Image 1 (tube, rainbow, N blue to C red):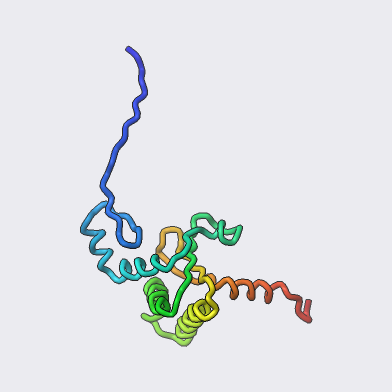
Image 2 (image 1 turned 120 degrees about the horizontal axis):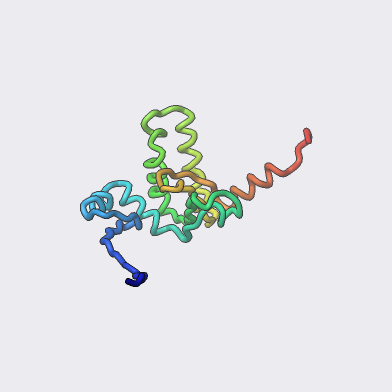
Length: 154
């Protein structure tokens, strides 16, 4: 008797949605592609110029948290806002003044990225179950400057 080692390769079919999400079942993939989430994520992917993670973008943070870098145009504003509201449905299902303010701040940030021809950095959560804005490159730099500039009380 002798002992040998064999390499065994297995293949399985995977169905890939328009936005890159993978499914093992064709009907689930098709249903996802036809859903609002699938359609909007596919549109968002088309304006994503880089996919990375917190660690590589900010030189700190978590490698498990994806960051998408968008370069939006005026035509993209509604899609970005729709994706934001889809993943943060609490903002529209339970309307409050605070929620309205959050939606308006998101809208203004998207418009700022467009008007300044700046990148918009979006966080997605490690399993793409969430969506938030880090800001534009300019807004992030301004926040850092504001937070490190000494005040009269320092």
